[in-house]
Length: 280
Ligand SMILES: C[S@@+](CC[C@H](N)C(=O)[O-])C[C@H]1O[C@@H](n2cnc3c(N)ncnc32)[C@H](O)[C@@H]1O
Image 1 (tube, rainbow, N blue to C red):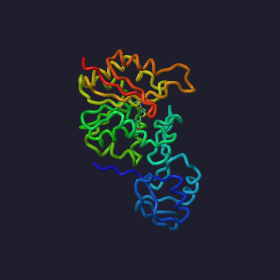
Image 2: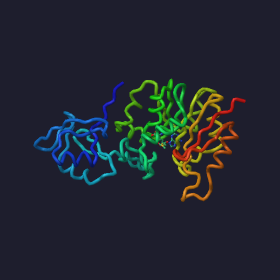
Image 3: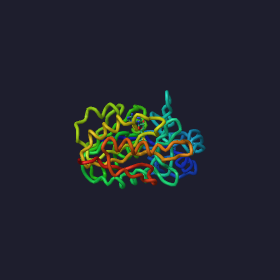
Image 4: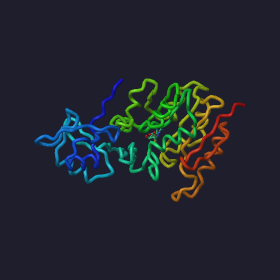
């Protein structure tokens, strides 16, 4: 399956075009494209075009990502009950939900953040459950690391729409062995057989936005679907952040232990724990 993402314009692309450059990136730095200057503006990919006025506006906004569809310029963002936005960082963009970034970007990049999580877990084969798809970086890298297949779950249809615009998420929609399911992981997981997955990537939003994904009942469900000896990475956030007085790490460790997980180790670099389901 192929997926064509629309031309993407960032402030850098806009500035380069306004400076008269004709070789620019219209896919968030994944490749370079030759664009053509026309009387009214710029022809981007042979179909879509953009005018100078729009470029001047985009050039002033270094935090957003814009795309062009049917000759109209849109910000890659969807509002409603929550505000979902593709946000520019170095390299792969991140997803912001109500202004909260879904990947670490301080002193790192979303791609590096993902690779580090994957390396700590050591996926190189087997069936992988990715409980929180987001932009699909963990699912894509699990697939690229040698997983037999990856099942990735996302609760929010608007996040899927944002991922469909993101050139860095393309493989999520083109790889046959990444299965995408829409729904709340808490319930979707009940449909899987017991002892099924070799690895679980549990990368939820912070505790304050998705507390049920940090609870005993959900950990019991994770323990049911992972094979004995299977390994999990669980993003937990910092044990003691300056916004939080209680050490949520202690509670997470106790609950994982009660569900049968062992070797529960916190990795400060990626702000999460790895653990293994007991074989006895
Ligand atoms: C930290 S992001 C995941 C980032 C992702 N692993 C990646 O590589 O891009 C968390 C995602 O979980 C989704 N989410 C929130 N609650 C969920 C739930 N109950 N079940 C499944 N997904 C959920 C959010 O919409 C968000 O896209």
